[in-house]
Length: 141
Ligand code: 5GP
Image 1 (cartoon, rainbow, N blue to C red):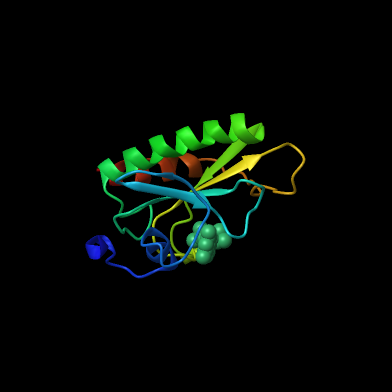
Image 2 (image 1 turned 120 degrees about the vertical axis):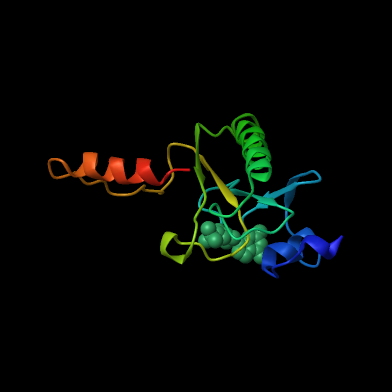
């Protein structure tokens, strides 16, 4: 059972039950449990049992499965807790706020009366968005 735990993080210990967590979903590929420090009540983490570092290196099949599981759980946050909305987020690398280096999807239920404020938005100088879009497009493969 431990052969897939190639990277020892707190999440591997939750998978192997060395550390307890409030588990809401489990199958052969995925595990989901409540975040210990919730942004809002019901904040859930969906993780793969097979280790990957983050969104960048997770394989296609795992990613597909995890996002389907995430959608099921998001819907259950609506029906069970009355969430009006949800933020789905994968912090990837320290610059993006990642602190646990085992891929995870945050599901943060939103109730309309919580304190979470999303990011400030800017604007582009003329021509800059086109330039950036061309660069990004050329690097997709
Ligand atoms: P990140 O900052 O890497 O995107 O998110 C890691 C999340 O894992 C944080 O929101 C943090 O509260 C949660 N977390 C860290 N340690 C534990 C733990 O031992 N148990 C649970 N349930 N969540 C944890």
